[in-house]
Amino acid sequence: MNNSTNRHPAGRLCRQGEFETAQKELYADDVISIEPHATSDFAKEAKGLPAIFEKGRKFESMTEKLYGCTTSEPLVTNGAIAFTLGMDIAMKGAPGQKWKSSASTR
Image (cartoon, rainbow, N blue to C red):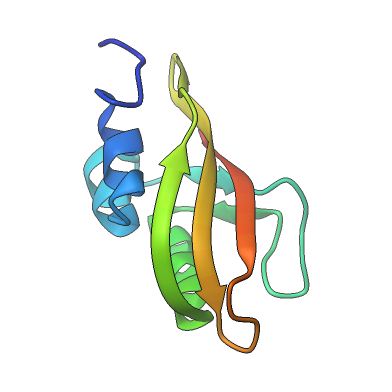
C-alpha cells in the first residue's frame, strides 16, 4: 500500500473525524496508543481497544466543536503505524484553542 495519507485509510478516516471507525477497522484488539506525555486528563499510554475507545469518548466530551483535522504522512512498519494528527478545535471552556499531537499505535 502506498504510504500517502491521501490513500492510507487511517489518515483519510482521521481527517474526516472518524477516529473510532479507523480504530475498529484497522487496529488490533491489543493496540497501544502512545501520547507524547501524560497529562492530568490522559495517561501516556492506552492499552487495548476498549481503553482507546474510552479515551476518544473522554476527549470528545471535552470538545465543543471540531473544525478540521490534518495528518502527516504515516510511518507504516511491520505491526505499527505512526503519524502526527493536527486538530482545529474549540475546547469547552477555551474556544478556538489549537491542538496538535502525534498519534502512534503498535
